[in-house]
Image (cartoon, rainbow, N blue to C red; front, side, top):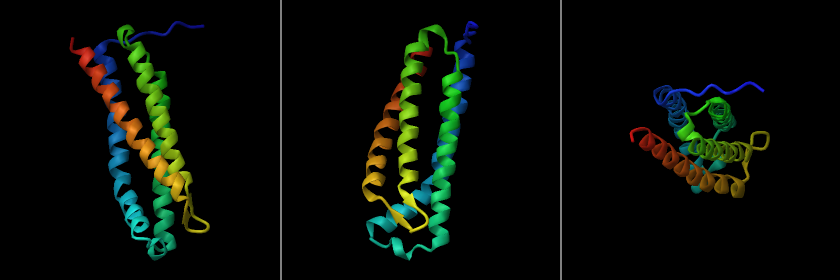
Length: 148
C-alpha cells in the first residue's frame, strides 16, 4: 500500500476552504427551492405548486445531494497534516452523515405523485441542522488548531 503524502497546513486550509465554498454555494443555491416547498408544506398548499415547480424543486434537491456527495468524496481523499488527522476524520464523518440526511430529504419527494413523505422530510431537516452545525464547529476547531 502506498504511503499517503501529507500536506502542509496552508495546503490543507486551502483545500478545505474550497470544499466549504462548494458546500455554501450549493446551500445558497438550493435555499429558495427549499423555502418554496417548506412554505407550501406549512400552509398545506402543496397542491398549489405546479407539477413543473415540484419537479424543479426535486431536481435541485438531487443536484445539491450530488454536490455534497462530491465534497464527501473529496474530503475523504485529503491527506490532512498529522496533527489534524483525528479532527479531519471526525469532520469528514459529520459531513458524510449530513450528506445522507440531505439525500433522505431529496428521497422524501415523490415527483410521480407530487407528494412529500412529511415525516422523513422533517426528520431530515432536523438531522441536517444538527450535523451541519457539528460539521462547522469541527471546521472552526481545525482552523483554530491551525493558527496555534
